[in-house]
Length: 262
Image 1 (cartoon, rainbow, N blue to C red):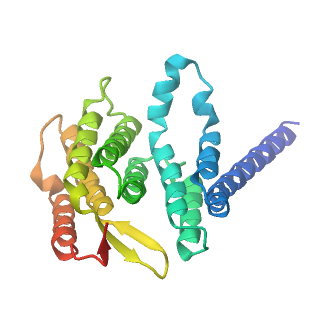
Image 2: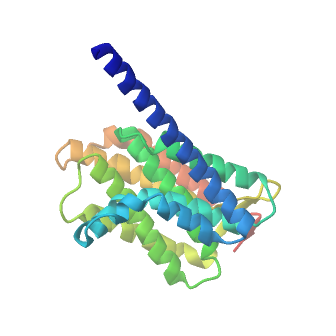
C-alpha cells in the first residue's frame, strides 16, 4: 500500500510539473504571437498579467509588496510583449526569438533560486526592460524613460537583494540603484543610439547594454562589501569590475557610430 501511494504521489507530481511547463510554453508563445496577430500590445500584456493572478489575489495591505516582489517577472513579460508589438505584424526572426526567450525565461531561468541565477534574472530584466523602454520612448518626453528606468533599476536590485536575503526593511540600496539608472537614462536620452540588424528585425539600444554592464559591476561590488561586513577588498572584485569597465569603454567609445540613432 505504501509503495502504491508513493507511486501515485510521484505520478501526480510528474503530471503537475508537465502541465505547469506546458502552460508556461503556451503563455510564452501565445502572448508574443497574440500581439503580432492582433497588432496590439494589449492582448499580450493582459495574458502576462493574467498569469500573475496570484499576485493580485491578496488583501490590499499586501498588494504593493506582491507587486514589488514580482517586478522582475513583470518587467520581462511586458517588455517582450512590447518588443513584439514594435517589431510589427509581419513575421520576422525576431518574433521567434522573443517567443523563445520568453519560454526559456518561464521554464528555465525564472524557477532557479541560486545567487548566480538571481543575478542572471536581474540582468536579463535590465536588458530586455531597457531595450523595450528605449524603443517605446524614443520619441516621447525624457521623463517617461527616466521613470521606467527607475522602476527597472529598483526592481532588479530589489530582486537580487531580497532573493539573496540582503534586503533591509527600507530598501535604500534598491532605491539608490533605481536613481542611478534614472540619471543614466536622462543623460543618454538626448542621443539614444540603436544598433539594428534589419534582416532579423533585431534592435539593441546602447542604453540597454550600458545599464546591464552597470548592473553587473554594481552587484559584484555590493556582494563583496556585504561579505566583508562593509569593507571592500579591491582584489576580490578586480576581474569582474575590470571586465565591466573595459566593456563599457568599448561600447561607448568604439560603438557610438550606429547604423542609425533615434
